[in-house]
Image (cartoon, rainbow, N blue to C red):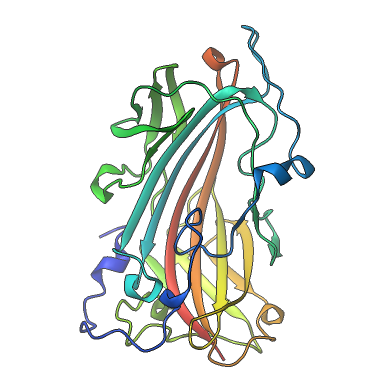
Length: 304
């Protein structure tokens, strides 16, 4: 069935976990468990990279940012390999605040480039009150802090693919803020998606020829990122990472130069992510709501 390819690889028998896996990696509590390459920037350090907050309490519409809507849909081929409790990890988050400068998604790797230096951006803002639930269509989010609503346990059946989502809050209702994504019918090499720890890490990333990936379907108005996090052969140490971003065209090659320095049989977590970013006027907030939809599949591989 479309978008659930990882769940239909049933030909592999369930077995015991292998002696080596990247689940030995420790993660900061503020960082996603399968996305170790993003370093969260300290808010006190953000002044060096983010514009000063520019709040606006008048009724005048501005070009500034007043909110951020995010859904991150993650499928994990081998949950035991990365220390995850289940195949699906779907989170919805909303932030609303007075108009301010800065963009929530400027940390994304620019299209047509690769980078080994990934830093999560921070937008300084004056948050609005959050006392009542907020909604992305039927997905409910509860207040998690001032100006922020979160649902960290969205079920797969609750997520409607290729659907326009409204944002309904105590501060107003905002229509068509984002359009959701769909996942994948196929990903190659298919060995990335082994579900059993005793078979995982079988896909090869070559030190001499790099890595080539394909996927289907292709979606318009979206970009595609492949992030490869490389670990020591025993899975205990993060050795490095590379993120490459292109328009969603169904294939990507990552040059061998990014892998030549890693030891043979280094383990790798391969994050294949489809992104869609949008920015929609919200006159009731005197600014714009920015949105970021991400559908990510996490597979396993090794370097040789």
